[in-house]
Length: 500
Image (cartoon, rainbow, N blue to C red; front, side, top):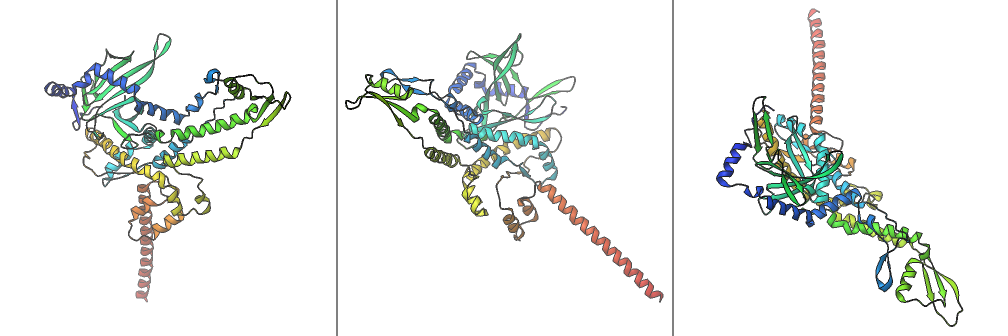
């Protein structure tokens, strides 16, 4: 890069002088304080739920660790490996997350601004690659309650936007509402080689307006990086001199699921576990012959109650004593009613959709009468979360646009500070297309651009507007051509009459 960031960026010298005068951010360089904060975060409930959300989305759920227990001697529970122990996983949670992400972020965002040049520059940044990153951020915010974007300049000096997983970031806010970020700690693992052996090393980075501090996490303590402790966000090398600069703000942008940063998994974990348990128990019961058919041994008792319970669980045998019956063996059949399991599973899945605020794509209303009113009713639950997410994400985009505007100004692409920008999330909703088109055609008060933006068949609004303009111009040119042709004919006819 060969530019000098003048807007929203300051040199390291300015930062150091300011810190000497005001003592700003001195707490960040307190190693002992950082170690305590990292240790607290690693043990915290917040991080635990973030990791649970990520694990459940990937299919690593509690059912996979399940064991079969029986009552042993003295009434104590003990693990029994002889019993069937099926671990059936029906990942309705991942389906719910994907449903929400696709509903909110399945389509690319639409950018509205009155400045056409600014629009082109924003579209170049918010391209398909960014859309993929934004979808990942959507997953992060649902699984962990919050996602993080990091604007930076890559090794080629190009402006880029990177994602940080939520379990790596410890944020510290300037305000009690947790809307203005002061600084943040990042804790992450990388694989390195020590000789021929691959080892996992934990790294720690502290992001602030001063730059990035680099450490290594070892045995619960921070070890300062000898080669680079404090590094600036922007480095310019013109071949002779190297100049380091920083943003005026900490370049980490939160994308929250809700203002409390509560992950989706906290709403539905017990329901997801219940679905897995019901399916696993059903298969276990279908395979347990000893439980479907119990052996009743007459006049062969003599065991204590604990042994009786254990034999019943493990062997499926019941010993009874009766003076009127001689010794022998009978059978007692126990029926497994599949309808009971189906009813419970149906209740669990319905409750998961309602508590997770999703929608049932197999809703009976869609089969019987799929009009627009029924469609909207089906989407009413998911719209509750979608509205909240959109409010949070709009504020996050406002913060991201600050960094983009600084980048554009510093690279000589124009000063767009204060320029109006509206980010539109195009929700991927099932619609009755005929009804929508009919309503648009009969709406005299809507502008053509609004009708085009709401039309179900339009993918790119600006492109469609340009196509319409081109077609209208072609029709005008064609009409003018016909008009000139008829004028020429009339003129020739008039000349012929004069000759006569």
